[in-house]
Every structure is written in C-alpha cells, then in structure tokens.
Amino acid sequence: MESVRAAVYLSVCLSLLTSLCQGQRSPETLFGLTDKELADSSVSLSVEKKASVIPRCDVGERCAMKHGPRIGRLCDCLRGTACNTFFLRCY
Image (tube, rainbow, N blue to C red):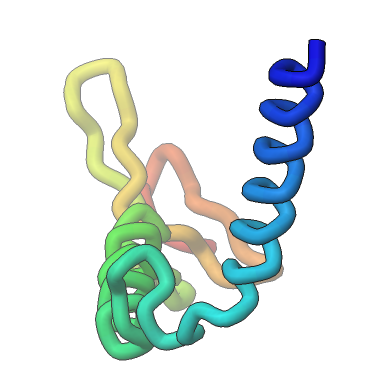
C-alpha cells in the first residue's frame, strides 16, 4: 500500500516539476522554429490562399468566356455592375 502511495506522490511531483519547467523554455524556439521561419511560412500560406481570389474587372472589360453551354468566369465585376451573359462583358 505504501509503495502505491509513494508512486502516486512521485508521479504528482514529477508532473508538477515538468509543468513548472515548461515556462523556463526560450520563446524563440517554439516547436523547433525561429520567428523568421514562422514568418516565412505564414507568408507562403497567405500567398497560396490569395491565389484563389478572382480579380476585379472594369466596366466594358471581358468578364467571362463561353465553353459550349457553360460560362467560365474570368474576373468579378465592380460594385454596381454585372457580367452580361450575352456580351460576356461587365455592364
């Protein structure tokens, strides 16, 4: 019974000690990456995400292409205009 109690106390003490020592780590090497590496990886993620954004069209520009019965969007018309499906231009 005493050996079980000693094992429990030992495990509690070790867990407290490790949780207190976690605060003593240097903040620069979080997960083995420096601040510069984290910034570089976040920039590459934002560029990949922006690649899916449709560009804006001015009035009169071609905004779509016709592929048989389907219409493919080339760009998004400005506010107040819409892509005319017959002329395939922003009006």
